[in-house]
Length: 398
Image (cartoon, rainbow, N blue to C red; front, side, top):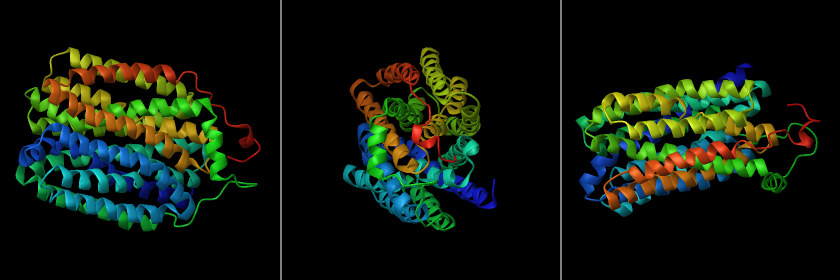
């Protein structure tokens, strides 16, 4: 790879490390925030649900803006919005402030500091045969943030108020805004020939059955990771596991996803991505089923964290890799952003229904069952995806 490609890959990885690491730590705040504000878990879950749906809405919008005005500009502005959301969250005194901060502002900021936007910069810089692996490296970097920041955030929460912890953590998206200056601040360009318009690209994708199935599959991924990311610490505490062990379990998810994201990214270069995705979702369903059927102990929590962590975001490089393989790079940020919107619809339901069913029944059992069924569904829908590049790409260089 060229020096420019390496710089863009490295900076994108650091940005994702910080932004995703902060986001994945929000589940640790749940017991402290709900107790301090005197609200139920559904309130916190709904704030996370708002965050995720707004992130999903922002993903294709930020992708289109990045393609038009430059990825760096979008990341810079989004980083500042992300900071403002965390600062406001530290001042929350009830549900409305929580919704406005963790829901609205963080959701908007996070929606632009995300994989599909950065993949547009990375994908344009690296060779075609290295794209899925490069996407896997960036995805794994997000998990390194989870691995590094979860224990640190857990320690801060044990030693200071959750409000002060939030203020300390707010420094990280500020660094993201500064790193944006190392990314391209100009629009991306089509590879060759007459440039396809965005409306043409959207019509093309809408008429492609494989693209619709990718949307359905990524919905399941969002449900899985956000339900677990939001409610897993509380589930472990309910099962008699202390918060320190819960934080370490989350750290294991992050550590093993570093390995898994890169591994699945590499697999996408050797095997058909749709088959790898199908196997991944089936394995998730099996891991969840085994976890809830066996007694919950620190050991089982760590084993589950390692297993689910290996598969945590391995879907991201494979799904984005399929989008770029089928449709090309020109509108990857927008098309992958639309797929990611459906991921966030699943995330909305995973965060909200986790709290909703817990408050209704005092248990997460129903939601674990839904997660298993969805995993089986996703394993099935990826199999018939038509994954050949479109005819218009065959005459173009990669």
